Image (cartoon, rainbow, N blue to C red; front, side):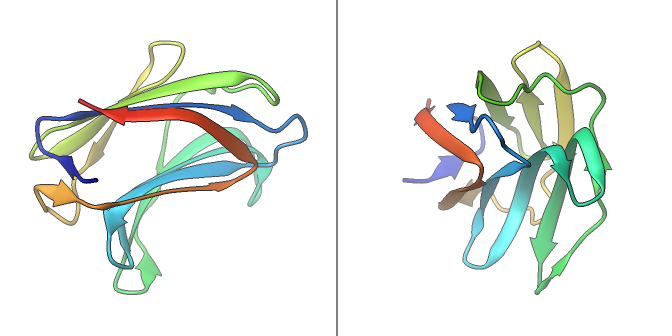
Length: 125
């Protein structure tokens, strides 16, 4: 399965009741072009959504989103629109994160979910 320019990825999940953080990752091979990391209490952050990319074995510059519509033990939804220049992530409360397509590919084949979360559905349209 791959995620291509012009498509929308919808992710629905539930964080664990005692979650510290989790992440949604989109990339290719070992590189991650979009890392979305809601942090309840992790890495020195509390109730923050941090986005980043991982290229060539190192993390790039973080982008921190405004607001935090996540709650431990509750369902969330992320809708990720993929344009040639950026990813537009719409969170459960309707807030949006604009994150650049730093790797610049038109198609990504790796989607990973890590941390204190259970993904209940995801789909690409």
